[in-house]
Length: 293
Image 1 (cartoon, one colour):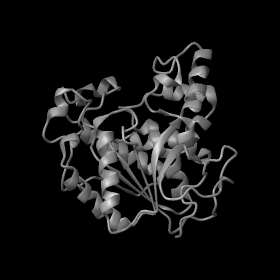
Image 2: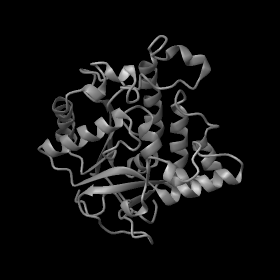
Image 3: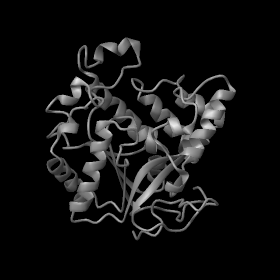
Image 4: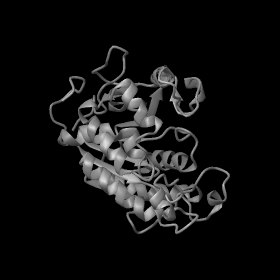
């Protein structure tokens, strides 16, 4: 167990994550999920769409794309299941729990985004009511989702944020702490410098200011040291094979900076009290710090 955590066991702790597409959970929170699950916490993942509009990075699977067979969503269900097995997360569901289905909205301004069945066009009150049922069932002390711009502006990420925050507001069960995913500009800047040093780049960015999901360091309240579980996270990323390639900048970063770039996961606390333990930068190091369970 990392020394930064406040307890030996997290039995009785309950963590709920709300994400837009399969693979978002592993990229953003894979080490956090695996760490707390390994220490006895109950981890529940709600995924709002099946990622039908994702780009297919595996040539042999190109036929799955929405412009061809439109079966990518079904395939990504399997990828998500494989990833969750690696992270040892047993409770993972889609919003609506199979009784309702929200389609991937695609990027803002595209024809896909205009379809009536996409998540972006879902009624906020209805969609949040579906999540309220999960909150009142699971009774999480901690909730993780995106910030108000969905990290980088994807419609489904923004809608997932809206649904999660509205559901937390309406639920009978009151969540003690709510976090939004965050990535400090200083960490992004370090990554960009490391990539430049080996003649590569980070999505073409010249500086952290060019990265939409980079947050001012002052807004990042919390860091989880998930390095004991970083190999699980990397393996879970590989399970999302249609979406993540091992020779892309994500994996290059792991080679150039060491696996810590994937093991440390960052958050902004937006509801609840920031509590000890803190690291040298004054950031929380335990999502459940100050929470009774």
